Image 1 (cartoon, rainbow, N blue to C red):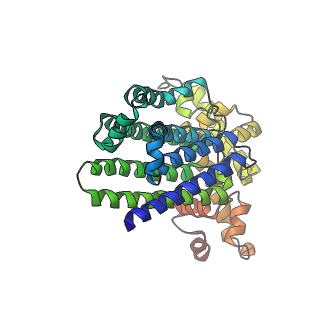
Image 2 (cartoon, rainbow, N blue to C red):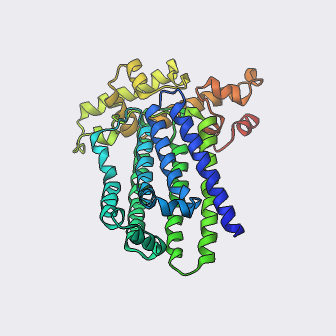
Image 3 (tube, rainbow, N blue to C red):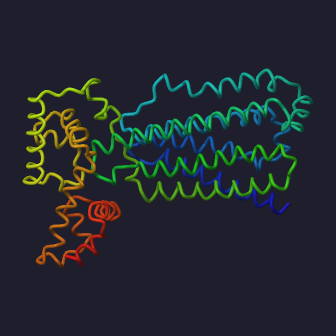
Length: 379
């Protein structure tokens, strides 16, 4: 009984926190309205689904159809999360008629329930509810949720993969990248969903104590993750910035058959690379922490498509790494300069175009195998 009460308490807190964050996202003034609304929908659907743990049986008996409908809400959670990932990754994302396809499982489930549950007599509904765990309807629900978990986990990580590729080829400012944040959410969320699949399998193993404990652990994880979402959303609003999904990758710009490159094209490419390197050294555009490939294209007067192919294909570097290499070289010069020994590492990283200490340290160690402090001491 204590474990069940503890489970109910955690579920109640989790639902409350989820609805509180959803209310915040729906009312806060921000440019990211669509992303916030989709995340709020995800949290509301999650809260409705999770509320079943503490709903009173007497209420359910008097409102069977409402309870059956509540069950179907769970198939909207992952579609809402997938669309949220799309909207937060790509600033130009808009909801379109094609996205209504994500409602198909929800609609089909309700049609099935209409003929199998909603139209039953009260006595038949009560009998079904008592023996629901062994019913075809519940097997159907678990099957749908299992398939959704697999399909949407693949879909979400494919979106994140494309986001990361586009970002590395077109942007340099680490703080505009939400990849790490959304990746963390996705990993944790789908770990919970796959654990939930295992928990549902335990339900049919005639091990009640194991099911209660697995449910308790799962609810504890859900509560921790929900609170983590709240803290992230409040403390790191800069994470919620997307990129342009219409930007093409270098591999998509290149002609299908590029095996033969004429001598004059080789000469043009060589001259462009030399001009680009000279411009980077003399004009130091990398000092701008928000430099994008579009802005560099405008400065050097090379079409952005050609510049993307030049850096990402012919120089075999992501734009992100290409620019950061110049920033690190500039930082190395400053660290070796005795006249600038009073500058702190934090001051130096801002001076050379970084605005994150962690990303500066990671990039610096990548190019030198040393931390900035160790490099300065060794110089």
